[in-house]
Image 1 (tube, one colour):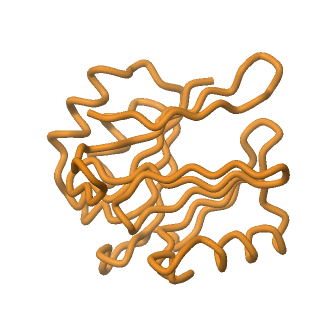
Image 2 (cartoon, helix red, strand yellow):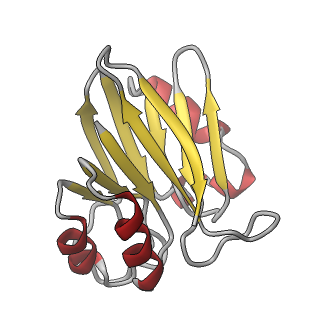
Length: 159
């Protein structure tokens, strides 16, 4: 199963259109918030199941602040991260996710790619396709692949 994980597109669809042209077909798209009104475009362009949460810049929308679902053997939490003060570090988010029984957590907000895999939990941030903040400032995303044995593999990629 091929899953595209993105975040912080802030209403800019050009980079997503380019990316989808490169990686399609995909089995699922997960957006970790700050879509700024482009959620319908994202759903149509992805042409697969889509999970989107609201971010701190998603005003007056019906998007959930968190999304919880199962993906293979993984109990997944998707959040933007700002409710967990993620800019200060992932500790609060990891602690809450563990307490709630999640073993895979995806977040956005910082515009910096991040991937940490512990024995009991994986926490990741795809960065931003439109306003990257990490050194080099290259637009980033994560490709997740679930293999035939049900194991997830992650790769931070750059546009």
